[in-house]
Length: 153
Image 1 (cartoon, one colour):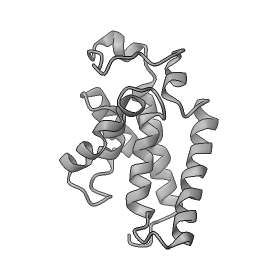
Image 2: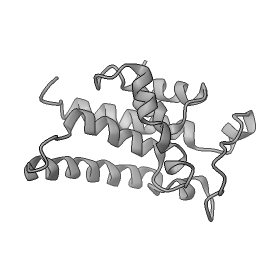
Image 3: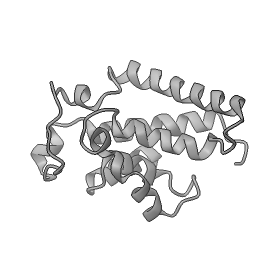
Image 4: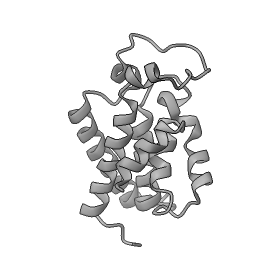
């Protein structure tokens, strides 16, 4: 099963968009599944349902951080390399999906305003691109990793 298919399945089982992408890579990023999905829990819905940066892309960034991130704040080279990776993936996401912004991807003119997530019904899934964006983001990261293997792997 591809990481994209795993992310899709996680979203369809009730995890938010970020959790779905991060959860699909838990084994690869050195986290147990529960920690990985907890780490992504506040990013869903464009960060806490604010409908800002797409949660699937936030999940992609978390995975990239865990594989290519830096811990020395003085390592400017590592920071620049990481940011270049993120910018490359953001450009690809934007090109393929039209936006990085959750509310734009959902076709909303403004955020919904409520912190309460909608019930996961057939209608919910029908009107949202989120399951396919989970698949897309996880596949994008999986392909990136194959093309740019992390040094530690």
